[in-house]
Image (cartoon, rainbow, N blue to C red; front, side):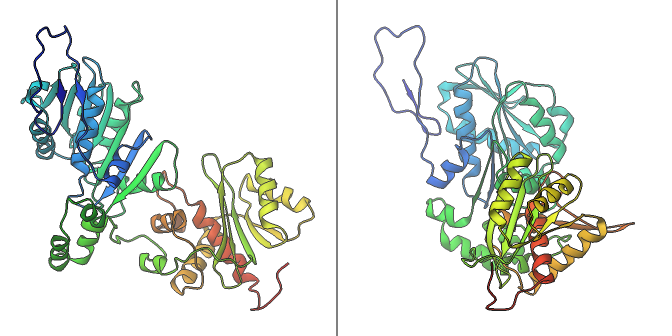
Length: 417
């Protein structure tokens, strides 16, 4: 018997002597290319920032149903939404889509039990404590930007024993939430994570949204709301020292000129070593980002930098690295120890450079880190850093490069050795 979830099965001949166990063939519904690539990625953690009505809920229902169809009797698969009413929307959609003979539903517990015995639960995330305790084999967290971070922590704990995959989806809603920050980690290449963005353009190209409807929404909605709901672009909600419009205005492709100044931020534990070289116009012309043992890091920095001037983060473990670089007879390396005062100075210098378009850099992880970067007023002054759990290696490298560039700004036409 061929079962086509989300469509009623066509009639098939009845066998005279059916086998003891029916063979069920799953036929995946049609998804548009970018929708399918985002949801059916190979990584364990799939994070998707999406426009409203881009098909993220439908696609993830298909994905979760498929995970459950490969499951065993008694295995649990979860759909977690911000509140009960939203969980019920997905619950009803799954029941409407699956052929009736392939499942039984429990309206009280909001579960769908498939013929193979796997159970799909539809839960609300408004009380994180109720999410602990189970072993879950795959999960979807829906409208993640509207769910408390504690609920994500609870859901993640249920996947520990099973090592189950999860899809975390939602509209963009500001920058001060765990979903936005986790998306930036995934976008930066964190292990086992995939990041995707689905905008109204993808939905229109995929045939599930009409362009005139988008134009109408753009006409009647506030600009910031439209950007978040249809373009998956976070609105500015304070705390960024550079300004989002200014960050965007400095985005250009990597220059093909030679570098005249480098900035090197060195890895600490799980961080990245990042080097950015600026040309004589202050445009990024070299960008390297890697994680290597210290000896290999030293060799890589020497090879990349050559005899060009370089400012190196010499905080903590960076001090012996700087000494090793200088021991090679390279007087072009100097160090800067990050203190609250020194970091404030170079970050304010970078802010001036960005806002005056005196520096430029390519799109990608540099821009993501600049947009996520924050400042806070404390008793000891202004604290500049990435949000908890995120990286600021690219920001620090760019700030160091800008400091070195402005300290010894080359003359136009100068020969660079």
